[in-house]
Length: 275
Image (cartoon, rainbow, N blue to C red):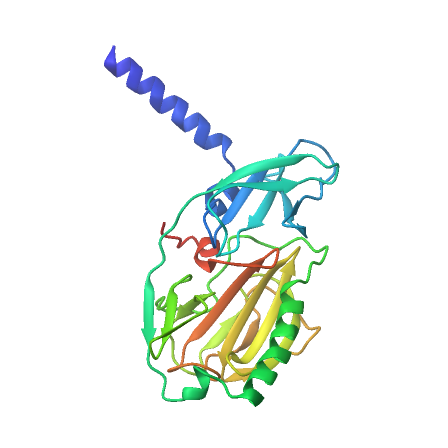
């Protein structure tokens, strides 16, 4: 009898797993700094959902059902969150807890910890540029949601670290770092369009790539930029070269992924997420 029960349980579990599509299995990590995949009503038209009054990426999961793919800001409260559909209906989902470690960094350049007034004016101008890029929402469907790694190398600083520079706490780490040498080519993890190139106080040489529907990659600290604004990139197209420009203690790639203007853990998109 126990054997029969175990077989039935196994079959039920396998059936449920089969009903869960690839996108949900890959991306659904509803934590602060994570991603929620939310099934939508069946139908031929996308229901145009919004989260926190911002448009949301919507795709058909394996050709069957529309799903909303929602980026959850790192500072989000735990518990129930709401997705608003075009017809005014709401869908709810829960955001669970996730622990993020601390990182302590020593910088010789004190201005990169406490910028002077001229630096602050520059930082504000640059922040406005980058904020506008993160808020881009194009109609293009992303070419792929299982991303390629932009470089081949070990992961160093993970997403979400609470960061202390010379003992002073600053914004959490909003991307994923790869420990690779200067000059390493950086490849676009999916097809996209270059929407911003700049040299910034904190980020150094920086490139933003729009993959479609609010899904955006940002690469920074580059030693060289090989693209220009407006340029289309294929999956695997060269963005630039790894460097240590801006606030960096050595050569590495810092890669951000933004979804509906929320910085989320890039590890989710390369199958490397660790709860």
